Image 1 (cartoon, rainbow over the protein chains, first blue to last red):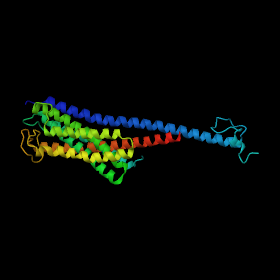
Image 2 (image 1 turned 90 degrees about the vertical axis):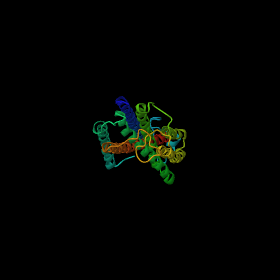
Image 3 (image 1 turned 135 degrees about the horizontal axis):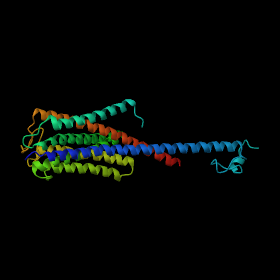
Amino acid sequence: MGNNAEYMILGYAAMAIILFGMVAWLYWRYVMARREEQLLTEFEAEQQADSVKAAVGAMEEDVLPQRATPGQSGMSGPSSERVRTLPDQP
Amino acid sequence: MVYSEQRTRILRALTFAAAILFVVALLMDFFYVGPEAKQGEAQRIFYVHLGSFLGAFIGFGAAMLGGGLYLRTRNPKWDTLSLTGVETGLGFSAITIVTGMAWARPIWNTWWTWDPRLTSVTIMWLAYAAYLMLRAGIEDPERKRRFSAVYAIVAVASVFFTIIIIRIRPDTIHPVAVGPSESDPEGTFDMSPKIVETLLFNLFTFGVITVTLMWHRIRLENLQDTIARRKMRLLAEM
């Protein structure tokens, strides 16, 4: 039967390739997931900033409807129905 | 999902221990124990062959356990355990098959033969590969978890069948390393104390590696679940 060392090396090499493949695959998926999570966080922060900006714009419109810029705040302009019917407006 | 600092530290320590154990196990395989008289150096494959089968057994066992607990509690965390068990078990059973082939070539003079054990291990591998296909084919999450849980419980029969087949079938040429068998086929390992020590160390090492990989895989699955939920929430708000 001989020494059979080449088959031993082949067996261990195959084991190492599969095992390290499993670890590398796991690591790669983890890195991708982290990257996606980071992108989501940035997107959520952007969306949060947009909604804050829109809310501030709406408040400005309520206080000074003649100065409000329609389309900028995401709310209606001073001539719209909503602003005209605000209770605190003359 | 936010994990406690203590759990993260334990996982880090386990990962480090698994890496160290793996290196020590390899050193034992190559330098501590000598070559077997009849089979030569190829016999050393036995340590990782049996170790990886233990890894597969732990993985598939966890899959069955997770499936059973999911059906009982309907808690998705058990489904995650089941999925990670199958994925890890598939990797380790692939190692078992490939290392077995490398051993069979010089000892049996063939890479592969349709021996009862080799056939049953192939069926086992395919049965668990089908589990992943089943999951990929169902969209409804609850239905997917329920079907997968039932499948994981049923599929474990292939693992036990693989274990006992060499003890009940006299026509197998696969050696029985531990315990009695129907026949005493040529090639049965005559284990010296050093072989036993190396084998036990390898079994322990592969057990630790399996648990570590499964733990990391569970964390990855939880992270991906969180990302999917956040995406859904963002889409709903848009």
